[in-house]
Image (cartoon, rainbow, N blue to C red):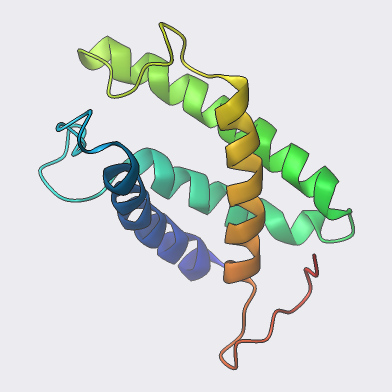
Length: 131
């Protein structure tokens, strides 16, 4: 399980950087955050969180899992925002807030996608967590 979580952290950080650059690069050229590499730790921690909790949520309907992922990832974002602000100018800002509802909904949807990718076996078949 540790290897799966560590892999999710690494892949999530890189995919998050790509995601942010694809959506926001023209408006925010400082998307490396505080690291000199193409990696955003907040996305890595988010992916690791989803992968760590997904096995315990497999009996719940997809909408409930999405709600839980939205909650846990929004809490992670809130905490990380305060750490980020303590270190200097914030890497993200939702009109002065650390979190907002549209992003919480997005985090729930991305959580469902992450769980599905994480539960795929070598043959590409999803196991244990059907949508």
